Length: 430
Image 1 (cartoon, helix red, strand yellow):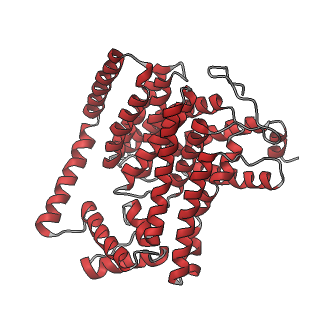
Image 2: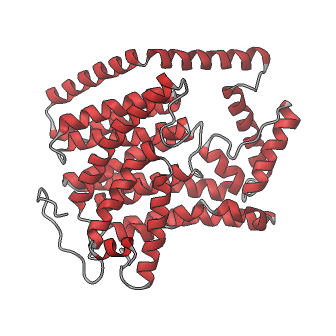
Image 3: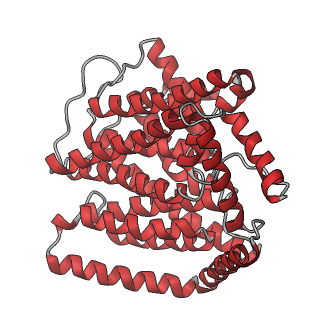
């Protein structure tokens, strides 16, 4: 008998979800694309279970609103290709959209997990990920002499998903859901150090912004003196991290200044900053040519490559314009850009509503998960990729699904009627 079949027969659906959740929260910084493999495989399996009525759809209003926005973005991408007659050429480039289309399916399966259990899994798995990320970052930076890329193989992606793990640890420590708050703080510091070693400047900006938001969300649990003390400790920790990572910070600052001088003095677009400026110029020009429907995915890439040759004399080509919204505008026009923006607007609206009407710490933690994901992705996506990378897409879905479910979803049984609600503070049952 197949050992996987035997194992599956001995595990309940809730237990399978536990292991699946551990993989999804632990793997992005440490094991990279495993999160994409796990999420997409889990989504396809969930679709099979739903089709065979071994699972049931969990249709919550916040989830439905997010699903509409995500599906509108995917539809805009398809429509752009149809309008431009590039559907056949774009088919293989549509594969990343499958991850987004799995959102409501994975949500329905994930919501059979008891909320407190899922919250603690997210916190503990993220803590392990932060420690693992630091170990890999130190090895890569000090021993191999390269920017830390973790298991992602890409420094910016590694920094993004590690930043998310840091914020989950910080939120877990402040929310009171996980009692081992000192361990969570240490994990957050370890993850922050890994982000420094990644040398990803925009995520360096995202870390303090998201950290302040996490502190503000949880301020009601503490006195004014406690909040002030946390702020002082936070500044002290930041200074220590900056001192340890001063070499990385100074090197990246020098690179930025050098790139800026080269661009302004000599019009040099061959540097990292210069390439971005060139892409933004080409992107806005391409958007003005096709403002409603865009050029389609493959045509946009061809335009960028041709633009580098014609306008800047560079033999360069990228899969995106190093600005998430500009990429969407070029590929799918205003329809795509507005649909992409609506995903984040609706996510923030759902989280804000929970923070306004609920007092449940688990629901507040879920809202925090959503907000830190939005802050991190939007900050990094201003000069990098927002949608279209397997690890980033899968991790975004993990955070939007789990955060939305924890914040405002309902727990359901695998089949049949909704599972009874667990009282706040009750011990989770694995």
